[in-house]
Image (cartoon, rainbow, N blue to C red):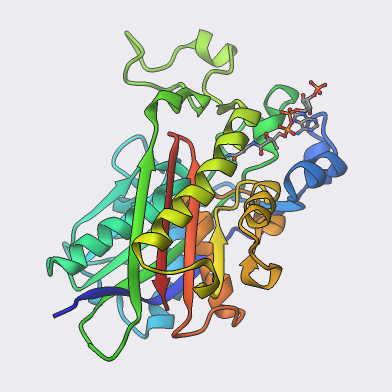
Length: 335
Ligand code: UT7
């Protein structure tokens, strides 16, 4: 029996509050022109006080369940990818578990930053193919707005990120006549560059306490990035891992109906698409509206692609990521 994991429903949720580039220019020395030109981002969403990451994840999940015509009780396991956990511990997945009111099914967070959703798909795929679980909820969920430095000092990173969640329900497909499902997934990491894009504190390795006043004064609790270094690696690794995955699946670039790339910077995706000669009609981006939502970017994009009719049942698509870690990955699937 050839058991595959297929995506039977997707959903997304972003907060209502729109924050434009002009809004950010009131807080720091930046401009709509600089942000648009360097990143292609026009606006992003920020949560309002009181909203929790799990609220976004719950709404995205409910939409995915509705699309799949399933109930919460149909889910056997939850894997949630995030770099911005609702609490230091437990992971956001446990708060989602509470919000959904599920039975005692397992849940856990997976930390692979912007590659987290594709890493989680690989984990869910393993669970399903081994027969351990029949339906796995995979969520990407980020709240960046409460963790970025909205001052001149943090402007290079702050303007890029937004809040959001995306969800997909993976289900075992054992129908020999139905080719829908994940075909190949390839994951990579390079820990030697962990400090090229990271948040240093709070840190369990910092003694005697995880964060102190001096660290806050030095703004060491905000994300730091060597932007050009990250950019260079992204435009190298993404084409590499995409081609590696296609090769493993015995597919060619021309076979793919839609290419989804992580939404870190539109210029990165334009560069990759140009290098691989991917026609414009086979690409989709939503970074202009949401900025970089890290682990949530790919499932949000996937949900928008499906709902906009850009991706239809039977079509082949790829999802390719690069992010902090460094981590990079690609998956190819048939809807
Ligand atoms: O999702 C995780 C993966 N992340 C990424 O893939 C991000 C990769 N990196 C990038 O996307 C780009 O490096 C950035 C968009 C972050 C920056 O673009 P860049 O073309 O590499 O700019 P830069 O960092 O070299 O900075 C150019 C100038 C600098 O000023 P000087 O030194 O030339 O006077 C910066 O201080 O732009 C300045 N700058 C800004 N100016 C206005 C940096 N941030 C801003 C800003 N507004 N927000």
